[in-house]
Length: 207
Image 1 (spheres, rainbow, N blue to C red):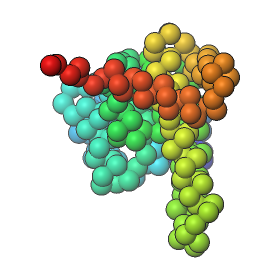
Image 2 (cartoon, rainbow, N blue to C red):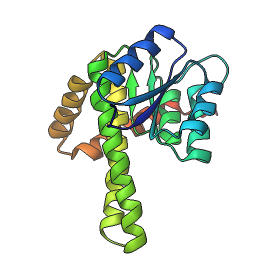
Image 3 (cartoon, helix red, strand yellow):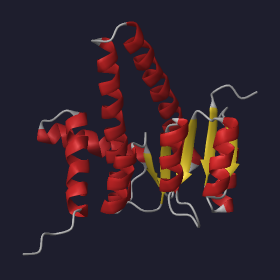
């Protein structure tokens, strides 16, 4: 019986979708799947998953469209799975507030830990929300800040995976090494990396 949580998986590649669905179910998650954005939104409204794993580029509604709906109307956190990590895509992923960004190709053994981490972050977010209602200061603000920092690190790891064709663990270790070499903490290094990518996405000023 699934007990790790309910996740919506969306990908228009049927083989990828079947692989993700099977792998996450085997890992103990309750999985709802869809191969297009319209069905994804309908299923999300009906089943209210705790997390969504979204492909970005699909026919019809894109993963970005689905993510915007989930955030605005259902308040469901989401992570992206995509073969693309160009500057514009990375900037949009950050703007929407994804909890993680995974770059294809990935095997299920790399995706499961990322999904488990996202569920852990969700629990932390709920704890921050609950704490803020009971005592609106201190620890709750710290928890919320921790969440933002974790999202930034996850995004930076996705960028490194794409740029250097690394798996998730190797990308994380490269980020750690870079932060150590530059004498910065991991979160600061991640933020600087993502901001650099965003700068590249900006159109050049033509004078």
